[in-house]
Length: 183
Image (cartoon, rainbow, N blue to C red):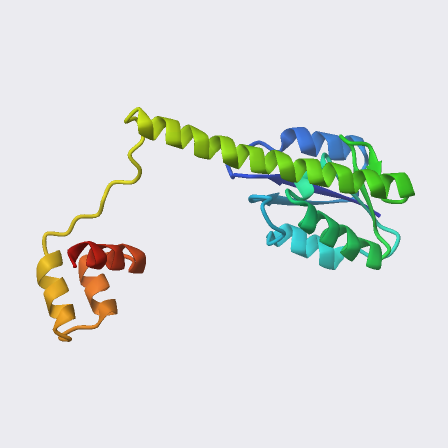
């Protein structure tokens, strides 16, 4: 059985291009995730891994649609191999049914991981540059006029930290950051 796997990172992204490719390739079943590829914790990917049987072939538009880091890619391929399932990536022309395909899969997987790391690095650099120009100041600080009063009650042991956070509408790390600033 030919099985197609389609992934886009967000619900806003369009899957049409990948769906057309799968139709052209005559896949029998499609599994579609709208989730980040940063790890293998994706509902349709998990469902597909349970669904596949020996002799099946999984087809992806590209390796980056299947996995974004080498570790996950190799783990997924090993899982498929153990079930007797072949993996094909159309963009990179990789077929794990051949020794060359297995080798190229590892190389392209490493390149996909490197690309993801570059994206993260460029994003950090862009934020740093924007901060230096005063264009990026981060999230708006949560201010609570009641903080001093609630903080005092918490320090005296009248209320728990959890109760103080609830009253102030703050998450744990925000609350403790304000506590540290108040000392």
